[in-house]
Image (cartoon, rainbow over the protein chains, first blue to last red):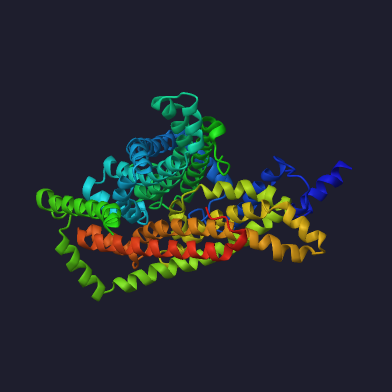
Length: 272
Length: 252
């Protein structure tokens, strides 16, 4: 009985299912991944290691890189750049976003900058970054800053604009002073938006740091990928790619959890 | 009239004048190679506009559009499949989610080893940059179709095909387009990085050349061209989303 029910749920179009059930929360994803790896393994039989290594070879290389410490070294190098650029970007973008949300004049002053640069991908700025800051750390940190700044500033501005006047009036009528309005209404309403912007900025920064490290660096996961090209070590490349995917998911989930934690009942319905 | 001048024109001009004078100061006091003076940028533009700027732009755009269309079609198909069939959703969701977080440019070494440098490798990267985000958004659209609309159509006698065509598809379309708009942004940054590394023509290649030969004026022209293209494409998508959405629209 239970089996037929599960079978119905799996094959019936989802819009016909009466409740939002998600059958096989563990079994199905594992099966999906296993099928994919099997296809990969089968395909790798027909190609050379320098084109497509087998899952086993990649796993072996992954263990080697982990044991040798290279993987952690390069991952930490990338993460360190990300974190520094990200923190500088947030530290500057949040106050500016607040200013843009509060003062229309200031917002219009910033608009030529935000509107022009948001359509220029950060990676294109790499050419200027390399000329201005050289191939060292500063150019990468600048690119991450560039990525973070626009997302966070615009998100913070949106957050300030979405503060509901009713809530402000409510606390005021209960006798709150300016500082209390700021503390209990303004900041909690803006924070979820700002974090959402940080999450998006971080996502883009992640792609940018890899490109920048591919173009000019001597450490980091992007460098690991590009330097493996010379010896056609595709197994190393695949390991680095997999690590990037895992790191990306972990960072994204951290931000989502943060949004839910700090947002609380101020969370706009479309987030989280 | 005076209000408009004070409210809009004044702040815009203030910033633009401030930026331009900072730039001039940079080029005079620091290094004209770092901050090319405006007349150098002008010269670069005239030389490039009469040269191969348009051809480079066209090649990049063709690569973007080919990869983008292929990736979007695949993404919409898989997304509908996943949204419609819980079996497909259960098996593919984690896999797609994992690939979505891999920066497309990280695939470049594999792409070059599989397809060599040039068009196929760069288009592959654009497909990679497009397909997963479109899949996730389409899937989300199908999965969150308002159930009462489906019930209403069914109680009026619609069969599965009609439910799909008249309810599911139109309410999913805005989601899919939103995903495509994000994907287009990714495609733009991916193509630049890809052409810098693995192509001998296109905007990215042009920027890389300009960097190597320290022609900062050329870089500036390239960046502005890129910005304008990105802006125009984004506006087209916004209009499309507004048009196609109709009463189902949910523009993010």
